[in-house]
Image (cartoon, rainbow, N blue to C red):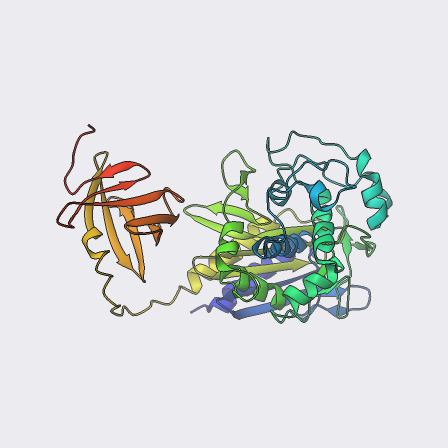
Length: 438
């Protein structure tokens, strides 16, 4: 019988062979554990150096997940608001009106790259030049009108982090994320053992070296090198964050859809996070592309399971298909553990009369007390649909903090005898038996 590792290995080998990749390094993780990691091919073709899971690759735009996390961390600390305009933190920046929220979700409308032919010259502006030349950059779309990928926006977000903290952006990311999470093999720029970047010839099986890039002032959007093990650890964190680094509710917010990319709703964007819908499941993560490198981190937060794919070829059209395929294989081969049920404490006395079935607008709802929280769900909803969860908001008042009607008030009405007679949620009346309006 084939083992899960054999299935993962075959998927990786087929991808490396069909894609004609100098090397591929892959990993599968579940929870905080890397359950499989393997590499195939050569990190250095001319030198005959084989790739290993410890080989470091440029991860390109996966760097943006760290930039976005830094912005959210500063938001949680009260040092910025996501609706702040760029000009509040970088006053000299032209196009200072895009908000940080829109920049995070690629909805700012800023042009894709810094001014100039940077991808022809491969000479990227330093910090001062980047800011000085912003007046030349175009607002190619009205803000919030559509998704438009912008490396320039993320370069500027890196400067926002540096301005607010008074620290170099690279150092802030290292101290606040890499070191606390043990990402010891993740560095700014190449460090040994680093894979060399290649271009695979289209009409032969020869490869050519690509240049190793110096990014100048673009560190907010790219620049990190990493291994599959470190990125698996980072993916596990984004599935189940350490609250000492970033609040779980904040990471949840980063994974909420802000803008759709594809008209069939299969690709969207959160706050610094790519979102792929495959059937009924939504995966989070990010891809990266660079001369001589493409990469992908992908995971299912619900199952805390995902995959990492790193290569040293910049031309590979099957990156997302391979990454998502490997993640789906991991979910099939490594099903989530089933937790034993255990009794919990009884609900508070004031909550107990709210539990059970209620009706509103002809729909039956079930209110329950689970894991110390008041929950509500439509009785006919499939069991996998998350319930609405409430937090107390005063006497006989609760606020929906997740699920349907998030943010809306649930108000409890009691009769003269203290019995609960009616609920009002988002102003709609809820009764114990079906009633018509009026």
